[in-house]
Amino acid sequence: MTHTVRFACYMLLAVVLVLLDQWTKALADSQLQYGNPVEILPVFNLMLQYNQGAAFSFLSDAGGWQRWFFTAISTVVSVALVVWVYKLKPQEKMLAVALTFILGGAIGNLWDRVMLGHVVDFISVHWQDSYFPAFNIADSAITIGAILMILDMIVHPEHHKGNKD
Image (cartoon, rainbow, N blue to C red; front, side):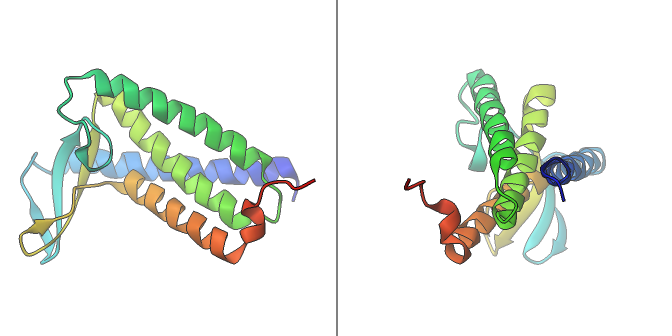
């Protein structure tokens, strides 16, 4: 497989993740009432929430400036991820998939932030009265990507060593 085809496959995966994220957010926005939990399992609810901050609602009440701050950060990170994936060697498949998942998640939440002014969250996991912050498919993709990066560091440590010419 040529470098261009391989890179295109990774970018296609990122697009699929963004589309899945946006589709599920649109579905949640149209079918759920804001703040009203719908129990799926005793530990799992669907509950529509809007997050103007970062992960775990960090800076969500900061007055509005955070929208453009996180938009700028997400844009820079997304461009850096595309360049990083492009520069990877053919044998760095797990790292490429990891970075692609992070890219798809970053773009999914970036889209919300630019188009809506907030990120749509709707997945709520809890144990009794202890709730994990609500999240979405983009957040899940970022988490999966981070886990894959850690696994790649364990399984393929040679991919993460600096050049020692």
